[in-house]
Each structure stands twice: as structure tokens, then as C-alpha cells.
Image: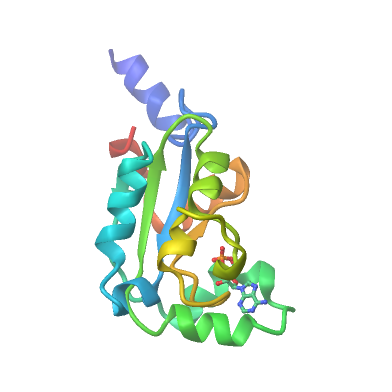
Length: 159
Ligand code: CMP
């Protein structure tokens, strides 16, 4: 038992038997401001996702800047960081088969004007920036982004 326990502790708690089945989403500040956050989470549950970890937080400029660092050179970076720090948001670890692709299908295109009918962004987003929800774009980024918000022990609890 002890050997299994210590082996578990030294492995990645993202990878154990979970490859491809989890992703990271963020319900964004515009959804909290307009009172749509609960409906968005219900929509995701209806689409078959299980919430495995989550918290509400109000990101600092440093946190939002670091989370979106990949967009640092883009013209919208400053405005995006300012929006993401304008109020609370809710990162969630979600579980479903083919989680990354399945979630991207469920939320729709970045710009709600281009999002398919019935998707989260079509139903709840305001604009390309204030677009209600973020979703990881690959398994690798899902793990990186989950680790950005959640500790190892929270990921263990989410197994
Ligand atoms: P998200 O999926 O969180 O990933 C990056 C975010 O940048 C995106 O959702 C939008 O909120 C924002 N974004 C992407 N493209 C633009 C754009 N052209 N103008 C403003 N914001 C954008």
C-alpha cells in the first residue's frame, strides 16, 4: 500500500489514467457581471462535462498577464488583461471523453457573431473579447493551465 501511495505522489496527477479526458475552462468576468455564470456551468453539465475542481477568484494584473502571456505581442493584450481583472472569474477542471475538442465544440468560435447556434458563446457572449468563457486549445495547454490555477493536492482530489 505504501509503495503504491508514494508512487502515486511522485507521478503527475494530471496524467494518471486521465490522458485526454480533462480540460481547463474559465467562466469569464462578463458572465459574472451579467449573472450568466450559473447558466453557463449548467450548459456545460448538460453537455456531459463533470466539474472536477473549481474556484472563484478575482485575478490580479500579474496573474492575468501571465496566463495570457502567449498573446503578449497582440494588439488586444492590454485590453484583455484589463477585462480579465475587471471582476471575478471561475477556472474549472472539466472531465469528459475527448475533453479539449469536446469543450471547444460546446463553446463555439472566439467571436460570438461567428459561433454556431446553441454554443455557449452564441448564447451568452457579448463580443470577441468579452466572450464569456475560455477553453484550453490542446491537452498540453490544458495541463499547463490547470496547474496555473490548481495545486497538486487539488488535482489529486479531482482524480
Ligand atoms: P480566450 O479563449 O480566452 O483566448 C484569448 C482571448 O483573447 C480570447 O478568448 C478573447 O477573449 C481575446 N481575443 C482574441 N482575439 C481578440 C481580438 N481580436 N480582439 C479582442 N480580444 C480578442
